[in-house]
Image (cartoon, rainbow, N blue to C red; front, side, top):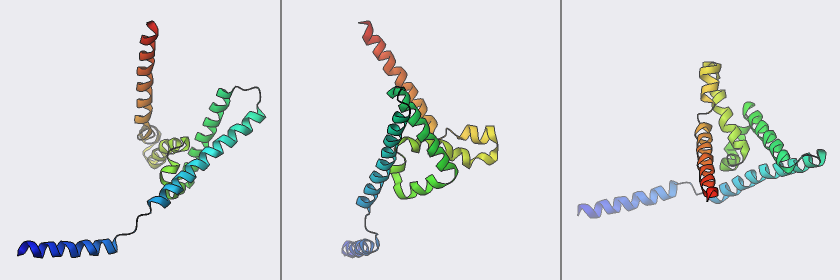
Length: 154
């Protein structure tokens, strides 16, 4: 008898939760993230074309490095003036994936902890988020380089 009462209560509670639960916005969220991330990447490509036209003697690799540096600077600048956080609230992962998101992940903790001083605040907290990414990249690069070296010996 008690099991039947509990089952009815559970079903009633489930119906109540379904009525109160907000509808999923996953499609809207994904489309916004895709659009913003894509727009950042398109901006990078346009920037690359403009720099290529302005500096025709530079190699494609040099121009790619220049564009990367400019995008990192813009991401850091927008983080510093508080605009990138607003973009992140709207775009979600779309603002994190491009290289500007990496700049944001380095600058945000530095700004947050600047009251603790330059060394113990900004410099030490700057790589809290980005540090593991940098270390992982370096370690995997070394491992791939060693594997390539060993393979080239044969």
